Image (cartoon, rainbow, N blue to C red; front, side):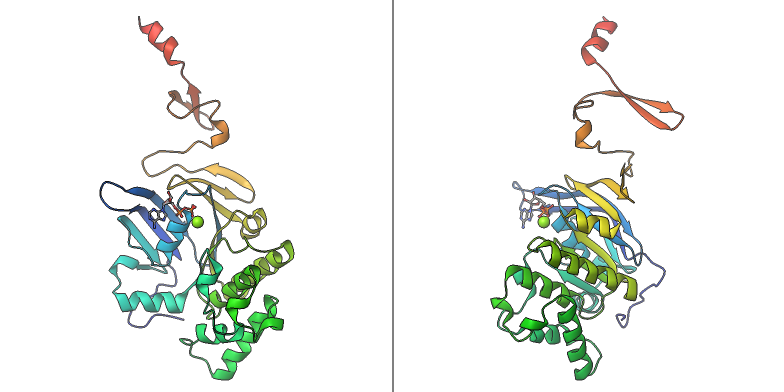
Length: 293
Ligand code: ADP
Ligand code: MG
């Protein structure tokens, strides 16, 4: 699906953040949640966002969904810079191209509607017949193992059932981009596997780009590429199980915390050219001062 009146570019990245900064709060009590995030996700890629609690993962996901305005920097989704879109163009983009699963599953649902009713409501903007919408609703309910509770009120479902329904809702309109915040936290391993399978099959059959915040190693390994956010920045990236530090635009890099015993934050190091890269050699500052005397 495309947003009319705009120019979605099929060759553009699904997600591009350029020096994205987000500061919450009012002058005097600010929290810098994102401190210059650079991130590109190609069309059809699947990415897991990892990192400790408070690192800025949810804030980043909300920016990708166009729910927050950057304090500085830019966010582009499917080739369009979000800050350049008017309110209605942004709303259409979110409705037609982005599927969003918020961290609190209940916030994704209409609690007084049935599970099936929620899926029909989610498809309201889709250009499909009523019969096609009902068919898609029951297919999605089947896939996430909720066919049995199709006619129960969403608000009465268990946390895990609500989470699975929320994912089905996020995928109802075959979004080009699926954003999911901790999609498996409330699930037993079997339900988590069903959720992972649904995400992977959307990716395989429709080319859906996926960005999911997760603490679940099963989700991270199913998605393949991992981005670790620490202290509001991209700290590390993992591909095929291998972990790498990311050299930022100004040459800055975050050392993995497990190396802090060798190079504690605040210590000095010699950066030395090495045939395979750069070697960081710790400097004993006391000895260096003595040498100078
Ligand atoms: P994560 O999802 O990685 O746990 P968040 O994006 O939720 O991290 O939060 C990042 C930082 O921003 C934290 O320090 C958090 O306390 C702060 N924060 C999040 N939401 C708000 C808000 N609405 N107002 C003020 N500070 C917030
Ligand atoms: Mg969060």
